[in-house]
Image 1: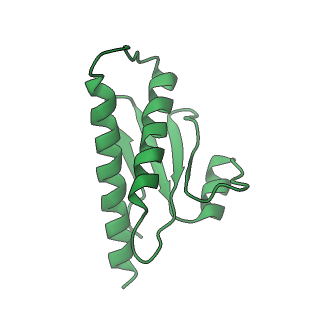
Image 2: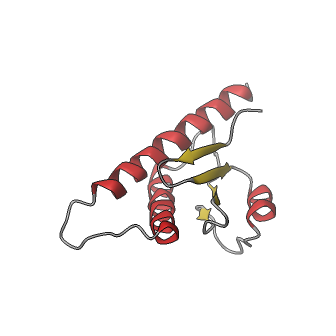
Image 3: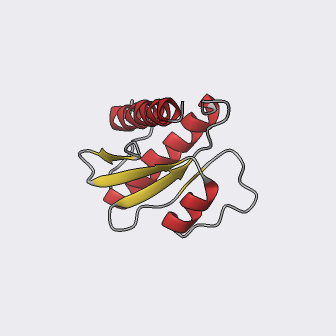
Length: 115
């Protein structure tokens, strides 16, 4: 089975990716209810979870961008990292890009493993 987690350095947080709702709920303790696009759990002891379904071999890019923002926002809240108004906030932009790239690599690995 391909790796489904990535370390978000330098924040010392592990992001676990789930393409299955039940797996996400069991691992994160969060109930999805009516969420259909995706979900992110808050970090607990340096571990957080993202649910984003794979449909026809790919994820929905707007949903991935949306959930990646929630990952970054949660990580910064968890670590006490500040965001500035009217500033470039490059650290947030970098982390969102890293999460998007990492999830796309995991999805690619998962779908290639299923063929």
